[in-house]
Image 1 (cartoon, rainbow, N blue to C red):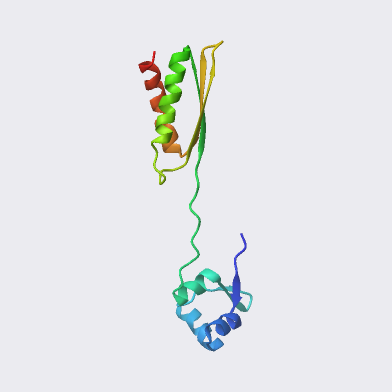
Image 2 (cartoon, one colour):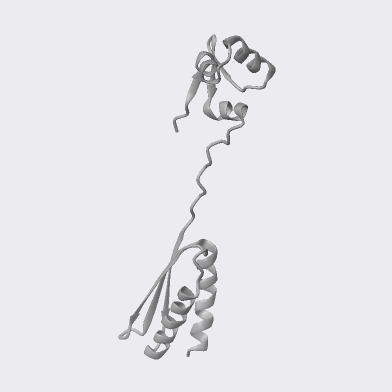
Length: 139
């Protein structure tokens, strides 16, 4: 991560101040600076803090989880009901809700159903709790 650094001279020029004034701000603690050898270096964030500008916003962390749930002993009718229940949850979500993607697959020869869920950890966790409940209800 590269950080913008300014010298005392550059800060004085940017703010329209004397270099002595900038050094006094550093000595008084009004302006944070790092001493490298005989020179001071001021970060962009510290300069923004002095001038009252908002610091650059850090992007929010994006967490996503993927889960695969396999269920055996699921008949065709039950698989259709389970897929429709999941589709109902997806369609009932609001635009402001965290993103959620889901897919279902059914293998009739093995009577096996697979759910693939991708999205916010809390939402996927809630769905992982609901699917077995739905399964018991649709037997």
